[in-house]
Length: 308
Image (cartoon, rainbow, N blue to C red; front, side):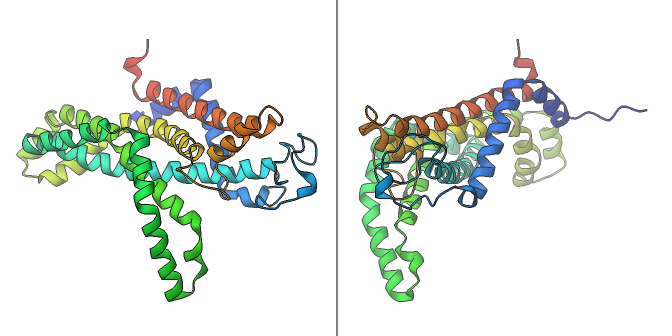
């Protein structure tokens, strides 16, 4: 029997499967995606349902993670919070990735004035404190967006325009993407600078191919390996940032469940009701570690020469 032909991605998958920590991280991430997708249908209780006669109950068979100060089931809110965390992480990472890839590819491929201007813009963005930028964006844009949505509701009478969670998500997506794209731009620029002088790129130029075709067909595909590793780490970072900003009150606000605002609520009463803090904090910690394991595994799989 002939051996199957090898390729970069097939070899990388074989190396990844041999990394037990990376496989563990991959399974945890897969569970997170599944929970985020079907969460509302598997929660034992409605995440907004209140029962004042069952406030602050400890973990039990009927409430595995206990209840909060309004009698809401904590595990139901943690499960629904997975959807919030995953939605924010994916949207923010995709937006930041698009901005970073476009700016980094143009800067690295064309060089000259494009490179200097875009790298100056990247450095300037990275120099602004993240929390300060998010607070400014939320403070300056939240009221105008809410006013515009109220006007849309009055014009259309569609109740979706009165969903305050939409304002939170739009501001979180935008503000977090604005602070998350510079690392992708730097990484893509470095990869493009290395690839643009390769013989196959020179041959493509000699054949008369346009810069756009060379960039899209030959340069960017060969820069995907390190970018995939960065994206896997960026998803975990985005979840932590969303939780941190929600914890500080500038992210996703109640009643929409978020691991960050649940941790913030639990921190105020953790001495008397520790389960309100432990449940969301433990889930966030496990998911973050899983993304780190997966990122390290992808790095080893896609860059075998870097292994010791």
